[in-house]
Length: 68
Image 1 (tube, rainbow, N blue to C red):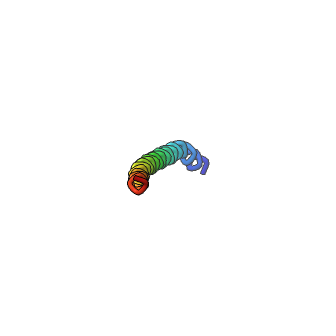
Image 2: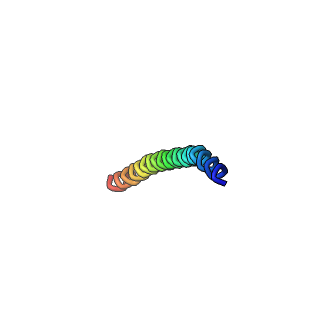
Image 3: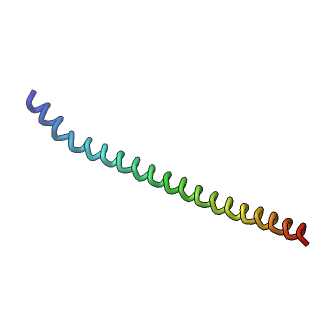
């Protein structure tokens, strides 16, 4: 019985390493996903800012046209 328990304990370290590898990969995947979300958000904000600037320009031009 003691031999079986010793064998289980000896193999436990291997299982723990595999668990750590899997957990580490999950963390890396999560970080990659967060970076992708942040990049997409940054691009969307840039596009919205450009569109807003265009809209403001059109409004400014119309106001100037009316005031002539």
